[in-house]
Image (cartoon, rainbow, N blue to C red; front, side):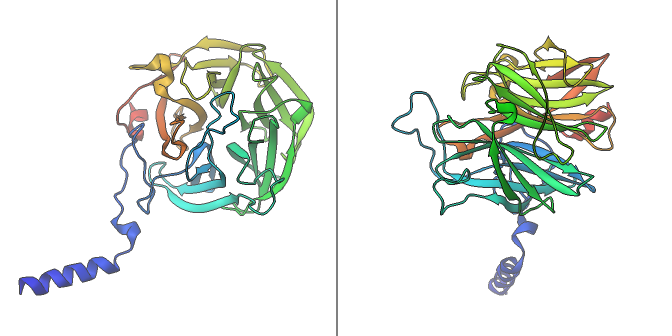
Length: 341
């Protein structure tokens, strides 16, 4: 009888979908392996979020395979072959379903921006209400980081496929670490590290979000800021960024402006708690408002593992606003109820 019962239990288990067996996430645990609804580690590095019609979409660098340091390297330009941009969807920001590679590598053309031998970083997707298109901006590079361009792709759906439109240097300037921000009036802006990462450009995009409008400002001149993450609170604009120390962590800074094109004022390091002076051994990539919660934001960071980039982890932390002061405190474990306090 016992043997029969065991056979029945094993038999039923074999037919259960993997997604049912995957453990549901109930809290954010910064720096730990974060698994999707199929039980696989989430693979979305240097990414950003899009909220559309009740669903969050997380886009990021899909890093697969061995991390290498090229023989010719004169600096720590560790890389994996380009696989493409992955996409995940979620209703609660904790449990993410893998939607696939929405912008894949182009394997048969060595000259293409998306060939595996190149570099694809920091994809961000925004929705254009006028055109009904989803527009992706990313940092595209040659393997030696000399190309320094922005690449653009477009889709009719948040889960792709995205059609690559090509690359360029916006406003005829180098474009490396970047993000895209859509303001309340529907205008979109690209923030990007330029002039050999010494200066941050803020560029108003055209109405279709596909290219620069020609209007831009130069900010944080010779301050060497990268990894921009932008959000708006109480009518003011905020930009979280890091210094330029390669893969190694440094002190984060937050800056504020009354107008998105500047003038920007740096107001210090918002991180608090253990290792706050190293940004918790991570680097900023995006700040996402929690829809439905007043004054609630999540700061997204990457904890890069330069010699095994696929195993780089995610550090998501709450952005807390109190008496007009913004802090990002360390928590080993937390959930969205923190914003109810």
